[in-house]
Amino acid sequence: MALGLRLDLRQSQSLVLTPQLQQAIRLLQLSNQDLIGTLRTETEENPFLEIAETAAVAKATPTPVPEPAAQAPIRPERDTAGDWDQPRPPRAHDQQLHGPRRDPDASGQGSFEARLSEAPSLREELRRQIGMLTADPALRQLALDLCDWMDDEGYLREPDALIAERTNATVERVAAARALLQRCEPTGIGARDLAECLALQLAERDRLDPAMRRLLDNLPLLARADWPALQRLCGVDREDLEEMVGELKALDPRPGHAFASEPQVTLLPDVVVYRAGRDVWRIELNPEALPRLVVHGDYHAELSRSGLDLRQREFVNERYQNATWLARALDQRSRTILKVSRAIFARQRAFLDDGPRALRPLVLRDIATATGLHESTVSRATSQKYVATPHGTFPLKYFFSTAIASNDGGAEHSAEAIRLQIKRLIQDEDPQAVLSDDQIVGRLEGLGIAIARRTVAKYRESLGIASSTQRRRSKALGR
Image (cartoon, rainbow, N blue to C red; front, side):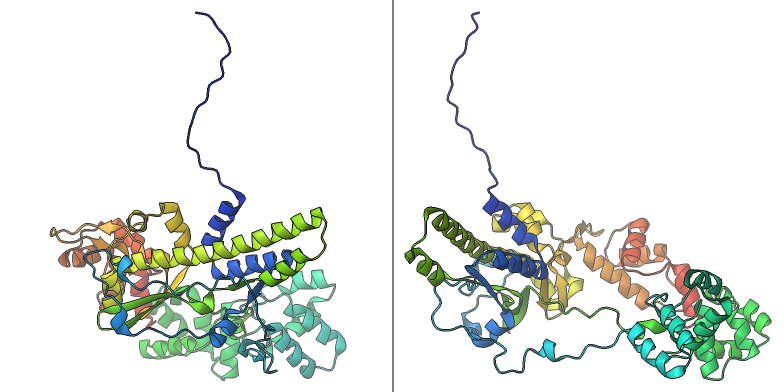
């Protein structure tokens, strides 16, 4: 057979991820906070982009809610995502701006968050108190230095000898500085361990008697609820011991937590679900959580009419095209999240009516089939996204759970609903008859749920619930 070169033409299909497509995929999986950060970076680099505060948009352009009669009910027996109202017209971008832009804080009052006073931190409060407790500048400075050694719970766990070595001070001076620090509020600050922290608080209440000191010296026995040993060591009867334990429970084992080290972050849901009438539920995007991106088309038109050379004109056109494409990608992100959310609640209608105990098994494949999207797209659309419902605010991932077979041939059970059932059984258990994992398996079988003991243990641990032995000790202490 002769060998030779030949030129052939073949046709094939392939998927190419363009930079724009890669950016759209990245925007879809971002949380609202990360998305706003990304958009702010884009606005700094693109003169045709501006991001407006969503709260101001909500105040300036309120959207009326249609009458409930215009809504189609959700029917669990079929997919009704297509029967619901179409989403509001997107406000992801404006092509033209008319009139001057208003400053949302033009009234001079500013936003509510800006008017909030920031609470002092633990170390700031301690520095203020230390300055009033001593006139010795060297001792005051050493006590101020000790504030930086404390952890967020208010403990100064390092021994005095180590601190003295690191600060070039004597052990006696470090002990005096620690004593000065322990005179500050909240009481218990500067303690080496839990026993000393509780002792400082009891001393302030004039309750640090010898019996209480012996109880503090034997906290491991208290954790094991070894009542006979504690009665013998403290020299008290059971009634007095229970009263002493009650006093300990009234104390604060983490005095530093009274001062938040970081500001609390308010969670804004991406999607809102509410009842709009009998058997009618509305599912909408939360306008306050969606950043509004403005594209300055008038600015681009003005620059296009000016005398720009070829290189400048190419730069302007490229930036404007990137701006408009980013606005469309943001609009598509919103539509995808809404589409996926509607498909989820079309299958979780029972949750809206009866709460988490009525959750049905649901996997990504079910939503992908209903929406015509790829499973990876559904996963990105639900990642770090939250929905506000009449039963609370949940991650969208919360509504996906595997199926647990029924032992009576009935409908399958959601794993999340079973977790909730286990939690309810443990909450309602008799303190004198704490349920073991095997007994929980028996209770669930009585409810028609077939589940293994190791699965019960896994679900219990995921809920942060201790074992039956630990719960029995806790209930013996009255916790």
